[in-house]
Length: 86
Image (tube, rainbow, N blue to C red):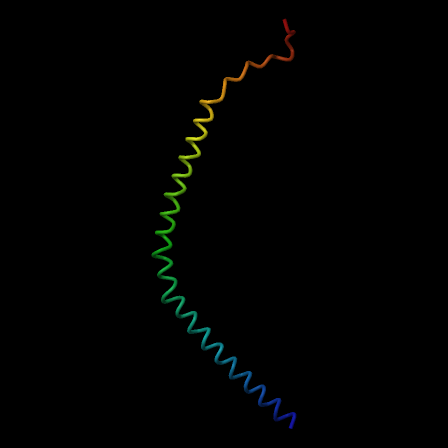
């Protein structure tokens, strides 16, 4: 009786493995046929948008740096340590 239950359990496990493999194949096919092409089309668009936004950010950083340099008072000349102070 234990042997029959063991065989039945092994058979159910094999059938489940077959169903999992079939489902996995259909998921892979769906991803390859539907998802990947959409990512390729929209992925390049997303990269272009990101590049434009990064360009804007770089300009803002440059503008802030230039404004900070204009507002900073000039630094006093440094004295040479080897020269005696007068």
